[in-house]
Length: 97
Length: 540
Image 1 (tube, one colour):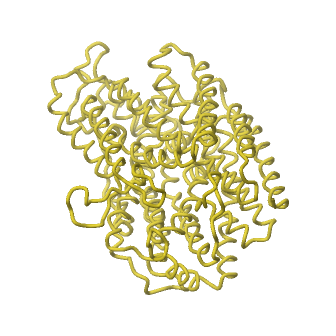
Image 2 (cartoon, chains in turn orange, cyan; image 1 turned 90 degrees about the vertical axis):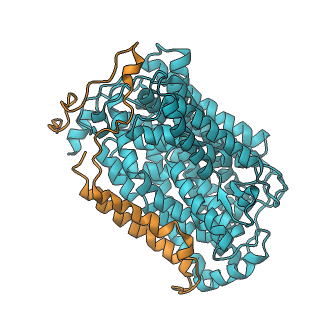
Image 3 (cartoon, one colour; image 1 turned 30 degrees about the vertical axis):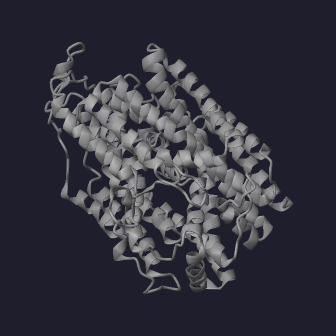
């Protein structure tokens, strides 16, 4: 469990801690964004934002469900959808670092 | 005064107090005289504990009281709390795990610790720390507003003693148990809140004649209220609704108490799993918001606040008092009161950790030992709580409300240094500092121009800034934090190339730190707690 072959402290593809104390400028690495494990599956996280942030798409009373206007049940419905989306992303990226 | 309600609230409070003191002995691992033992529970909390802790931390008593109160008086606009708490998790999902990893490796306890280490700048760290502390203080005071609303609904008016006693007891067990106290109490809090909400959303509509009748009553009553609201939004409210939801979501996880909850988790996986499952709390919040309409349908009139005026924050307790039998109303009041204690404790701990690590240590006592850090933090947590108590008792609670409004907008100004910092070192530390200062200054300047006609406030009357200020002929308004954080980001980006010849700080973090998991060795000045390895092995 404590062995993580892909990520040891002295990972060879990682530069050593940049700079030495006293020479501040060597700490600078402008533009270096590092190694980002950005996977396309992460884009799923945008779905809840698109679904709930523009209120013009759901700002209406009808259709009602059990007396509850669309405006309310639509947004409440997005809670389980959002949990499903984030859970899928969690499962898909679980073994990633 | 209702004796049954009072008795049940006192009994629940007593149970929680005992739990708070017992918590000191819960999950003990390693040396208790260290800041990350007292202030982060030893970084050992697993999935369930973290779920309850973060839920108990983020969904505060003030939310339970204020969101239905806003729906009661302003209608659909108050429902922004639902999209807000839906989008927050997808937004912070990726950044939160990076923050956990780098904090685990470098021993960071606060977001300001990270900023100082990442950008190599004490000044930037202090700017982040002050922002966090200033934003948190009124938030703690607002938790007391939640307790006060319960006290008034029980029928104890014009008396601050129940509040003082509640906070002295809270301060005592937080001092001795640290983050373990709210973590353990959160189980009680969340269980009670879920119970109350489930009963309320079934029983109250049943008594009032169904949801159809409740929404009809609200649709009839809202246009006649001073806010002239409705059960759907006006076109002119779209921008305010979206920016309120998005901005509040961006701000939430920048508060020190949210970050404390995240960093107390035992592993990166725990954080990630929680980010995916926490929205379940939002369902509860959504139904709670509807209590505002139930209060309209039940023709509830708010109780008088300590200033003698009707206080709309009392509508939920008054509704419970009015609709439930006394014994269940007592349980509901206990749930709200305990719901205030958990976040208040975590906020005080987070503010104290921030002071100790990012102001005391870098500027006052650079050689402070682990023991001294923990001791300073414990004492500061007491100071913070009593400060908030004094504000509520001797200054107007309205002051805390106004101040909290400002807090939500200024906390978002730490976003570029913290969140962008998790991904890149492109930004120059001084550019970030100037961007931060500009964001804070423009926020306060814009807030100054927001009147509140309902309370006769000329300034600081709300967080929605009318677009008519910039000559656009509309009634639309925008949540101030969004344009001001954009100013902050743009200024930081413009100044960074201009400062390219100025010295940059040393980055003490490495790329691999941002991907570290629990078993990886810590390298920072405050390594993860000694007992941690055992815990990880014990559960896997």
